[in-house]
Length: 254
Length: 347
Ligand SMILES: Nc1ncnc2c1ncn2[C@@H]1O[C@H](COP(=O)(O)OP(=O)(O)OP(=O)(O)O)[C@@H](O)[C@H]1O
Ligand SMILES: [Mg+2]
Image (cartoon, rainbow over all chains, first blue to last red; front, side, top):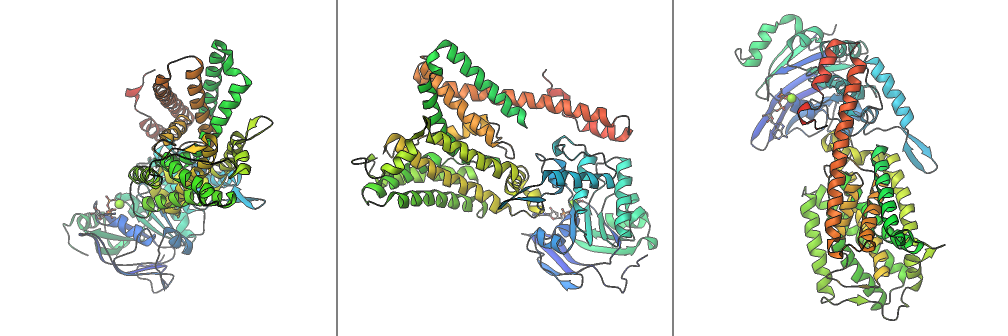
């Protein structure tokens, strides 16, 4: 098992990340290291800045301050594809799916498979549906590639969002509350998927409000409060009670 | 997806059959060709409008673009004696440029499409009237661009070139919208721009391109209308035509909320509108009721479509409920929670 602040090369390293939205200070001085194969739980109250941090790492907007290093090199992501190009995949909190398209179309959105027809490149519907079906199978989801996303249950939508991260060989997968609004059985599937990612050496950042999930799969837990990192502990060195008091502010820092 | 188009086609067939039964002149060869010509004329820019509507936007400026580009086009040919291929090119580029400016304002400067294109409507119309001092422009001795005129208002084996052009254009745009990556992105951007952006799609470019295409097709339409009417009166040329396009697109299944619609639907919507107009004439309904008939049919059409869709969704939800029920209890609960609210059930 990888221990916190392992001497090995970090896949992701944040130094003094800060973000302001006008007068709102969403993040301030956040440092973070994640090693390959490490699962880090990111916890904090509503508005603590978790999603903002994810969006910065994913290239949705630049940080106001600080430095991001990926695989040891400083990176500046202008757009989400830049982050994806180096191997960062994200499951967004609101899932970010296009309701009017099919499950397969959503899985491949932005990186569609094409087939050549003379000088033109047309969508390869067949190949995308087949690959999507494979991915849903790996996730043990009964989602069907040709179904429209707007007709799907919460769990199926989640499967689509997660399947997207499996298209490439990601080095870091960030999941923003992937277990909110899904059934117990499906939570188990998400957690076992995280285990499988870890076995393959993929680093995972799991954002969750659900203490049992974090303690079940994470090696380390990071607690955010009011845009600042308040704690960063190996899971064995802390307890749900301590994490709860850090989240609520009953305990200032650890 | 195809159910909508099929329904529209049946509606079109039924209305045509009834009108033809009441007055056989409706189905006469001459009348059909005349309608085909009008469908071609109105369909070309309706397709552009449809693409814009699929992005979740709207283009209100088309009719005024026709007026502005139209007076410039005639002036180039008559006053400046510009060779017609060059004049044609300039008008097309003019349309693309106006569309590009609107697309820029909407995507880069984050202005609302309604406002940008409404201002376009006012500005282009005003510019056309000022440029001509409100006087009608026409061709002098009719010889300035006889080749182009023959192409634009001619026919092949009796079938109007405008109609043939619409069919070709519809095929090209059909491939673009339904088979290409750009089309896929257009739908995604129209429904959930943020999701599309998160997926690495350059949403600004996708949206702006739709306005550019719409502007370019407005340029094409301008030329076709100029040779249809042979003159341009800057205060009335193309007046309200954007509304015909919007109506055709909506009737054809485009949602003003974006992300929905098809090329075939837009063409059928255009055809239905033209049939309605023709029917008003041929059945001796007072011409003043023209707009009222159109409005009523669109209203009923959209309402019926919504009801049918709601019913289909309920059916699909029930079907998926039945499918998963025996396998897992908790997913059943989830799915029944995801069902559309029963309260609005009107059947
Ligand atoms: N685009 C934005 N513009 C302005 N303020 C923003 C923006 N995004 C986030 N914020 C603010 O930044 C703060 C942190 O928000 P963030 O979404 O990161 O919280 P979170 O920890 O993910 O909360 P939750 O648990 O509810 O998802 C909040 O005060 C929020 O209002
Ligand atoms: Mg959040």
